[in-house]
Length: 85
Image (cartoon, rainbow, N blue to C red; front, side):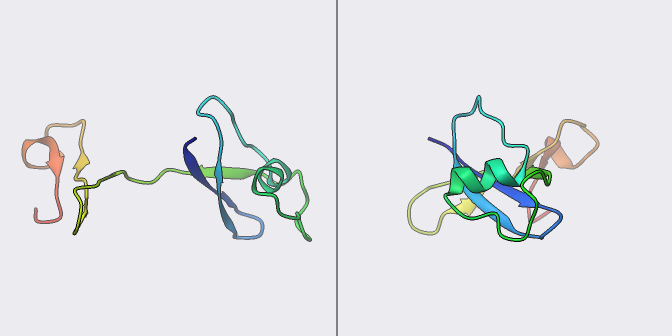
């Protein structure tokens, strides 16, 4: 099952959970239930946001982050942003 990071803006915490790609997590209470943790002082109804992170290509030892793909041809040379550009 895929893992996702969610951030609660109210308490500043980021929590990683696993769930189906079809599931959605919208509140701190839902996130805590999935993670198996207590909500603490944060109201269960507090909104959480999925953190979108860049993927990476695992190539064995010395794996590197994949370059950012651009949709606009003027974004960078060849439409692919690399750390060396």
